[in-house]
Length: 116
Image 1 (cartoon, rainbow, N blue to C red):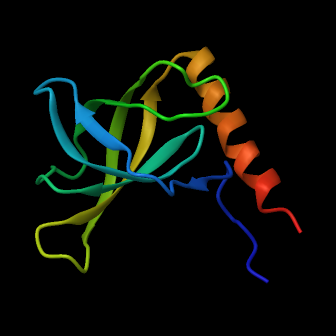
Image 2 (image 1 turned 90 degrees about the horizontal axis):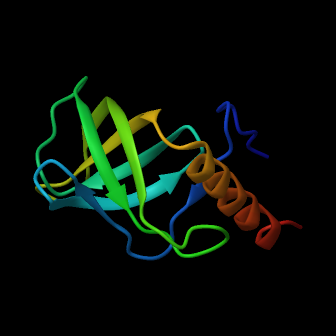
């Protein structure tokens, strides 16, 4: 059995969720997983490690009827198996309390569907 060691539980994103850099209004990748404190991005655009970004994405589900806007810090990036893509780990710096709560509920809903 693998025990989760992260502070906040996260949920794998099973559908295609484009992530947009709000400064350029361009899609920079797809959401890989999500917690109330951060996210994993499968980036299709080059991103600078230790940089700050303003991102937007749209999830379907509990309390997430509008796009989620976040200010993030890129903590790490590593090449993915697909050429031109990278795995990127972000922590949220700015997110509204309402959206953080909606993400928390969305993550919990995923845990309920995967409970034994």
